Figure 1 (cartoon, rainbow, N blue to C red):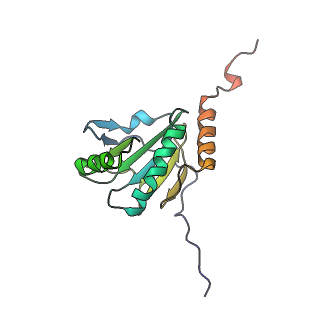
Figure 2 (figure 1 turned 180 degrees about the vertical axis):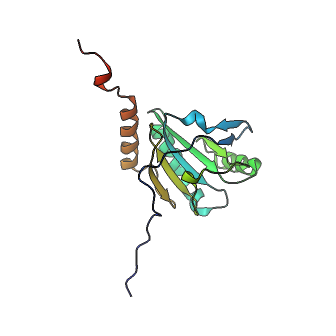
Figure 3 (figure 1 turned 90 degrees about the horizontal axis):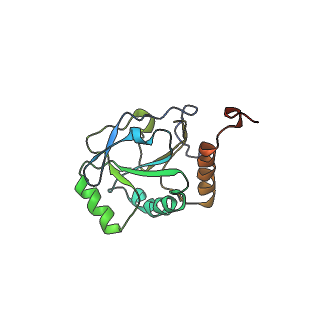
Length: 165
């Protein structure tokens, strides 16, 4: 019998991201996702209890360091309900990447997955242009090049918007 390859769950063609939810920063302050509107964003949904999630976090931190100053925001949202668990974990591992906690919030359907880790790339227009479930090497050179290209697209002002004189 022929083995079927595992595939990503189907995703609508570039669904719109939702920004009407909030997460908690590790200091306990609310972080409204609306702040991310208009940004090129990598959103990683993970858990401290998920071995593949923990295994990919170092590559996400390297990705953040590689593209964080290039107009790309990297966010890791832990599904753990206890902020202290996440804060202690991040401190123990020495991570510097932006980590937030879902807390009592619900993940919008567009970012909801049956599996963690789940990673989404949202362009500046608010469209989810990529999704992947499962651990991966997030700082691969091709990923960095792709994200920098998205950021450049966001930064370039179309010529038609300016009078040429």
